[in-house]
Each structure stands twice: as structure tokens, then as C-alpha cells.
Length: 175
Image (spheres, rainbow, N blue to C red):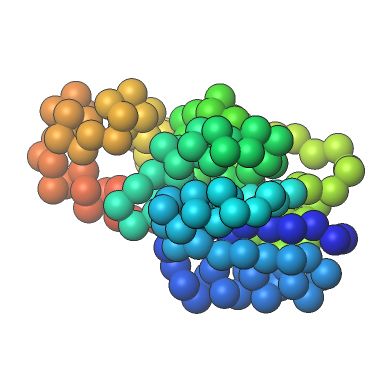
């Protein structure tokens, strides 16, 4: 596969590992750690595909996504996250992502997304979802509705802001 990728992830080790894996498969890769770096690269070059992390240091990949598409409307974007939820998957697709995958995803998974094979836009969701997972989904939905505002989300959820921050810092509950 001979695609040019823009990889946007704040985790340097993951970004480097993903880039090396894509390069081993014949892809050209440019990397950015944040929105500013990504927009600078995108204003200089065109890319076939982009792998965008949902949670960048102080930014949300959901907010970065439309800005990337404003610079290159035909850019195919894969939202990749270790904090997946139905709410963020739906929002990512609404904002223009072509696909959404939960970490850990293999290089083969990522390349399959951008191949010509038919693949669903989001990973299928299990029908037997735990109560803890439903709570996680609800928190994500409220956070999206409040545009990422932790204090407003905490008020709506009836919990202390620090408690909400601790819950968001943890990995999501397994399905």
C-alpha cells in the first residue's frame, strides 16, 4: 500500500511506533504531536489519510478534525482512541471522520480501514453492555453536549469536578 499518512498523537512512543509500522508497509508518514503541528504540515503537503488521536494533551481530536478537513476536504481521517465510547464515535463520524477505531489497533487494522475493502465506519458494539460501561457512555455523551467543559458536565452529572476528572483519566470500562 503506497499511501501518505499524517499521524497526529501526543504520545511520542505510540506516534513513532505507528509511523514505523506504516513505513514498513510502504507508506510515507509525517507526524505531529498537536493541532498546530498538524495544521502546519497539512498546509505544506497533501496526504491520503490521517490517523488522529481523540485525546491530545489539552485538545480534543473532535475539535481538531473539522480544522483538518477545512484545509484538505478529501482527507480520510481515522479517529483512533484508547477512550472509545458510542457518543464519541458518533460525534467523530458527524464531524467528518471516515472511520473510528479503539486502541489497541494493529497496523493491519489501520491499513484495512484505508483499503478498498468494505468496512463499517465504526466498530460494532456488543449488545451485552455492562452497567459500568453504560455509565462511561453517559459521561462521554454529557461531556460532548457540554463541549468538553468539565465543570458544566460535572454539574449535570451531579458529581464533583475532580471526581469526573479522575473517571475520565481512567481507561473506559470493558464492554
